[in-house]
Length: 417
Image (cartoon, rainbow, N blue to C red; front, side, top):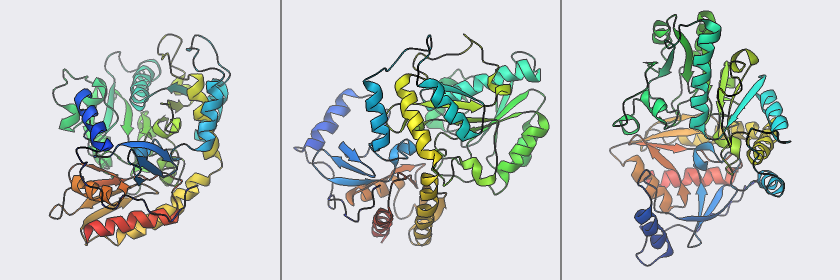
């Protein structure tokens, strides 16, 4: 694991010079890529652990980790080894046939989650769409909701993906606007408001879909006890509790799942990002047989979902989590990160929210924007990402060490000074 005190070489990184390799790569991307992202001006060519290197040889501390897709850092040897070994054997069969990797992966992922069945997919959005389909079908076939009338309660400020159905219940105008007509069947309530949730549930409600912590929103934490309240309410009203743990799950918050922090077990877990180890897209819906049993042959599918390569990498990820080592690291180092960030409040930072190795930092908007903070951190060799104007998100890989936590905190103090 990376725990070096060596600092990156990028101390005076500025906007790319017209003649540099960085500028050449950025110009090429701007010429040929659709502008659905606004990346920082750095071009990464190599990576290992918590560190990345750009095309000019400058090293940076990666404190974003692919929005949690790289929980185990770049090129973790166990994950790369699993992928390399599988590449020499078998990469795809489609689900028309069995593969020798799929059963063991699903068995051990279900065991990790304490559930009975796994429905493997590829991307996080695919897994969310799958969970929506499962919930509606469960509502019609098990709960007895009239066909076509199922409703799902979602949270304000949510982010569950980019498909047309998912953005139909987004209240972020950038993600939502000008993509209609929108998919009906969703009711939105304020995040963390149990009373509003209870009032929204009707006889036609089949599920409550939530993020235990809203990552894209800026690592927004719910009130203490809210998840337990949701669990009690959904049991009482015969409604599925679906936890989107795509960003929050698999060790990020200091527990296997963020729901574990309140001792809550939802009916359905939605997993992705870190499940593919930063190597291949792997996602899954994990639930008991009384929920996922409504899926029958031909009623849902994916050519690549559960492919042998993805299953091999996903199985290696589950093996890493089964020891509890990474969860413990996130708890221990997360406490150090939270303590250091707390000292910045009132000194250029308005608020900090932290769970494990995951934090949202609200920069004083009178000092700088979140985007400007990211540029200033880039100049000091640290990579992070902004959201919603003044918030900076931190999600360093779980292989980060104490010395690198210190580098991150030092860089933040410097840009706020």
